[in-house]
Amino acid sequence: MFFSRFIIDDIVKIFERLHPIELYNLIRTTKSIRKLLLNQEAWSIWHRSYAKHKEVPSCPSDTSYPRWTTLLFGPDDCDVSCLCTFDDLETEENIYQKCGANYAMPDFAFRAHFCESCMVYLPISPSSKCGS
Ligand SMILES: [Zn+2]
Image (tube, rainbow, N blue to C red; front, side, top):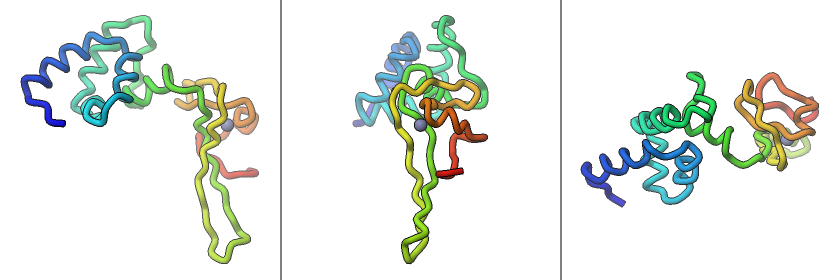
């Protein structure tokens, strides 16, 4: 879908007034809106949205607005990725699998959700190796 410059300016003005959770939900509506909001040029929309809604924890400088918003309002699926190695195959194959367990709690230091099981093996980074 093509947006004219005039329409984009109006959309930006509207989006800047929305709550961050509404921007999060908009990302999941159409590819055009997703592309618009995930473009780094749209960071001003996110910035103004967060500035307008002081009750929402502000986005740290070391992460992106969409990532931060997903941590705050996204699904509670565990974000831990596990590197599984299949040594028994003729060709050694490594596959990253996401835990994906539900009811994971957000960890704001790691900027990720951890389920209860993965929290036990709290990794140095959200990526770990199976069995380690
Ligand atoms: Zn997990």
